Each structure stands twice: as structure tokens, then as C-alpha cells.
Image (cartoon, rainbow, N blue to C red; front, side, top):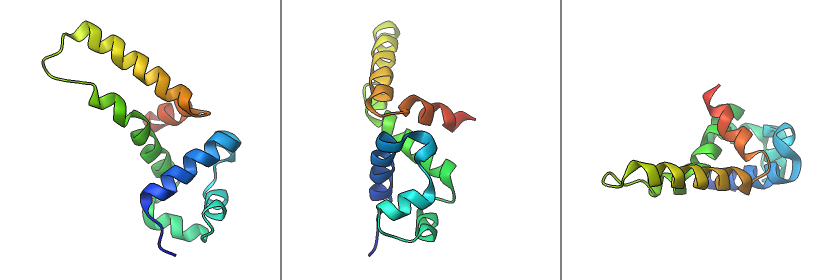
Length: 102
């Protein structure tokens, strides 16, 4: 079974929502995908790389709201509101995003 990177990220979000950040391990994720854990390392060299990809998907829609010609005040408020909404969309969503900068 060939698995795509996007499938891994989607399954990681589902597992995160169920088990939290501490419960999200490469081994448990592989089991949820019915693959061997080493197969995950084809897509992600480690858990941090997976979390980085998850954080990217979390804020994709937020970045789309930015335009070069918009006044900065409403843009800042919109981005802050959208980020908050994105963080609250998933269990430990803010922790996933914050962990990408550590």
C-alpha cells in the first residue's frame, strides 16, 4: 500500500484529536495507517518534521487572507482571529504550532 504525505498528516491530526500530543507517536500513527513505522520516515525524518507539516496545514488558510494592499489593522485582527480559530480546531493545535519554533 502506497501512502501519501497528505494521508499521514490527516491521520496524525485524527490521532492528535483522539490522544493528544503525548499520544501522537510515530509507532501509533503507523499502526493507525496500517503500515510499518519505518515507512513514515520516507515522508518525515522524525516526529518534529511531522509536527512542522501539521503546523503548515493548520495555518494555510490563515495565510490566504493576507493581501499586500490591505490596511494593516484589520489584517492583524483577522489573522489573530483566524489563528485562534485554527488553534482551537484541534486538540493541542496551539502546542503543535508553538512547537515548530522550538
